[in-house]
Structures are given as structure tokens and as C-alpha cells.
Length: 523
Image (cartoon, rainbow, N blue to C red; front, side, top):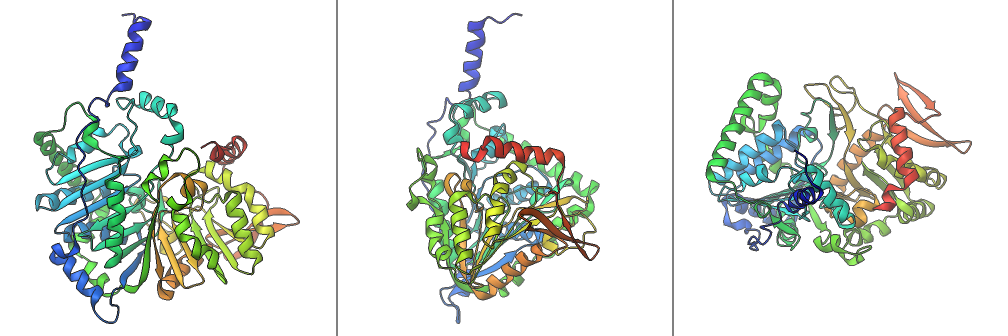
């Protein structure tokens, strides 16, 4: 059958408008429930108020991917009143299905679950995501949603192109909050690749478990985003809402998939299920580092700015006193590092003032986004000329690797690993852990969240992890030799120097193309 042009136009219009019809769905505000509403919350409060750390918060770094997964699962199991989750990316996989199963069980026992995800996560998945929200105790909202063209991948892509200036501005926050008393912040999204369970590529990352007043601070941040006009209920994009029967069917399929994984990949299943067989949260609570802190986050309205947002809306403005006050040593770990001119001026200025500045990022061969490397590479020479030390993490081997736990994958399927961590250590005194990369996207366009902890002990732990990654067997140290960039590394116990940048021709092409067309400047 031949489709006439007018009819085709109508079909496209219908597709483009798909999902828009019910955007006026009721969106009621809600607030984080007080920690003292649950026995779990009260026990954490009592711990925080006890001598000698009265009023401080407790912290533990989660550099091990298994511990990071376990902490999330155990917080679900311990929650009695509320769970608040905020994420940029949620990928399907065994780890995500385990967590979804635990969330449903928590909702069954009366826990209120609020899940806020960036709209990019929902691409093509509106109905599936909304099915969980069919549970009376679960609410799911999407941030900065695309209203047009949600019906198909093609029309959705077209919709973004029509409003690119806003659609590239995303909620990059990662937050896990239980009973407003314990929280997890850091670099990890949700997906197998963040928990060492992916067959192709896993990310090394750093999260931080926080207990006490810091959780309440982060609860305020979640509420700001949840109640923002930019956050829309997921079922508002559907012509018909999922039913209780749809949820029942989803539960059945979820349980069947977990059982299938248990049988077919028992080692991985058993490893991830450690949270059920050997829970660790009570042990970790006894090992917390207690310190003063400040939770920092971008205002959600940051993404609405016509041009560059008002500095008062930015996390970096809150972090500025620490950035400007560092006097001895600055260590940065940033998976995606594009300093831009302001960052270049800042870093070279600190180095010129006598501050030891060291930065760890991905090498071209290790990064999962070669285009970002193209935005970083042009700044290397100027940074090196001013004494900034640059380290680029090599692509690390999978099972059988020889590096520290953080920097190689112990996946049961032998995958490689790439750096995804974000951390800043100031003068061996304070550490900032969160979702923030040192690039224009994090500074200006995406929203971020993190926690600044005033603790030499915690800073020492974070510093040790960073220095491990900078070690010659694991990273290339980028240096200038006769005004040319070289890469110094170690293999088989011997140092050697590379005069050409490691990485495949395709990665080189992607980096070159990104730099040539100026992708970062275009957004």
C-alpha cells in the first residue's frame, strides 16, 4: 500500500506526539521521612549523637565493586520507612534485577520507595519502568523529560534535535538513601558494569557510605529534585497505566530470570548474593570514620538556563573555597577530564603557586568515551609546562590482573576495566566524593551531587587509592621530552617510554574528530 505524503505526515505527527497526551498527570509534592520514624533510623541517630562524635557523620569508602553492591542491597533490607534513589543511568542486568527484586519486597512490607531517574534512562522503556510504579508504595519520576516523540526511538531522537540546547542537560546525580539515615554517593550508576558483573567492560569506581546528619542533608537534595517542576511521573507519558496484573507478570518474569541466572551462572549469582548470606552493614557501622562534612549539590533549575547558569546555582561555587584554598597538595581523580580554559587557568595557577597538582584520568586506550579524550588532549602540553602531573590509567586486564583491587576487574567472565571514579583530595585534609567530573559538562550543563568530608583519615584512604592508580604498572605518566609528549610506564618491572599515544586507530580517530569539530563547545 502506498502512503500519501499528507497521510505520512499525519502518521509521523501522531508518533511524534506519542506519550504527550497525559502530561497533566497529578504530581504531588512529598518530603523525606524523618529518620526517627524507624528503629533503623533511630539506631543510626543514636550512633551519631554518642560521644565522642556528637553531631558528626560516619563515612566509609566503597572502592570495591562487590562492597558497593552489597551496601545498596543491605540498605534496602534494613530500610523500614523510606528508600529514595536518584540515578543518571539504570541498565538492565543481573545486579539491577536483584536490586529491583529487593525494592519490591521492601515495598511489600510498607516501605515508601521514590525513584528519580534521568530521562535518558527511560528511552523506549516507559511502560516497563512504569510497571514497578504500579505498586502502591512505589513512585517513579523522570527528570527533564522529552515530551515529544517518546513512542519510537526515531521520533525520540528527532525530538531531542529540536531542543538540543536543553536535552543535552542531564541529571548526573547518583544517590541512594535509606530511612533518611544512611546514604551512598559516588560515581556508580546502576548496571552490571558498575559491580564487576559485565562480560565486556567493567568500571572501577569510588562510592562513599554515609551515616547520620549527612543523610538528612542529602535527603534535602533529593526532595529539591523530586519536587522540581522538571520531574514528571513516569506514568504521565502513557496512554494506559500498567495494572496490578502487569506488575504480577513482571514479578514472575523477574523471579524466573534470577532463578535462571542462579542455575546458569551460579558463581556470579552466589557472589552477588553475599549480602543475603553474609551481611556486612552492621560490621561497617562499627568501622565508620566520623567527621564533619558538607553535602553539596547543583540546584535542579541549573538545566533551565538559556546560556551559562547563574554561578549561585552551581556545586562548583560551593566547592570554590576548597579549590582556591588548597596550598600544598591537590589530587584529582576524574574519569572524564576536560579542563577548558577556566580549568587550565585554575590548575596551572595552583601549580605556579607551589601546590603539588596530580591528576588521574583515563588513557585513550582505556576510556569508554574516546571523544572526551579528544577534548582533554589539547590541554596536556600547557598543563605539563606548568608542572601539573598527569597520569592516564591503562586499560586493565580482567581476571588474573595484578593491580590493586580498585584498578582491575575480578569479573567471573574476565572483562577489562576502565576508570569511572570522581574524587578530589585537598591538602591531605579533606576529600570530596561524588558524581562530579572535572569537565565543562559537570560544571555547567549536568547536575551533580557529592559530599565534602573534613577528615585526614578519610582523605588518606582516598589519596592512597589515587596513588595506587598512578603507579607505573597501572598508568602512563605523561611527560614532556624535548617539547614532545611521551608516555612513561612499566612492564615486567622495567620502565620504558612510548613516543606515540597508546590506543587503536579507531580511538585515535574518535578523539581527533571530537577535537576537530569541537563537540564540547557545541553543547
